[in-house]
Image 1 (cartoon, rainbow, N blue to C red):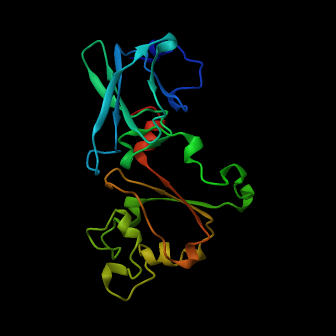
Image 2: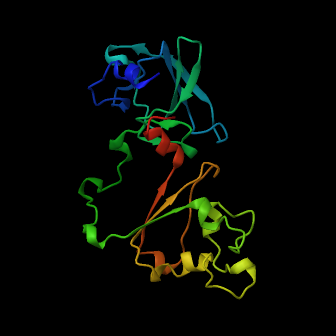
Length: 242
C-alpha cells in the first residue's frame, strides 16, 4: 500500500478505540479498514509460560463505520489479557497487540483490559506530579544493552547487555580489580552517578530480556533520581507497527 492508497482509507473520529470496560460489559474496538475479518482472543495470563495460563475464548468482531471492528462482551473484563487476530483478503492472518491497549503482559506480547477505576491506588485523584521547571531537568538516556555490552566493562559475560549488568558494584577495567576510573567502567556510570548533572534517567529496554524487566538501583546517591524504563515492544505497539 502506498501513501495515496492510505489516504483513501476511511477515518475514524471517535476516541473509544481499544478495550473499554464498564460495570456491566466490555467493548473492544479496533480500526482495521483493510481487514476482511477480526477476532479478539482472550487469555487468563500475559504469556503461556505463566501459572494458570489458558485461553478464555475467541470472539468474532463486526465491522462498522469508519473501518472499525467492534464487539461488546458481558461483564467487566478488568485484568483479562487479549490480542486481535486479523484476516486479510489475500489469505494472510496476523495476531497483533491492541495499539490502544492501556496495559500489557510480560514483554508486551498481549494487551490487558484495564478498568482505571479499579487500578487507581488510594489517593490517586489527589496526586500531583512534581513541579520541576524545564531548566532544572537534565535527562540521560542509556540503552540497557549498550550500558554493559563492552568486553572491557568488567561485567560477567552472561550479564553483559542485560539488566543484570546494572547491578554489580565492583566493576573494573577487564576485571583487574585496579582501574576503576576507566571510560568504560560501570563505576563511572553508576557508582559515581551523583557527580553527573543528571536529574532523570531513561533506560531503554531490549526485547531479549525475558520475562521480567526490572532493575534495582541500591546506591543511595541514585535514590533522588527519577528513572523511566522504555519497553521496545510497547513503544513499537504505540507507533502502530506491531
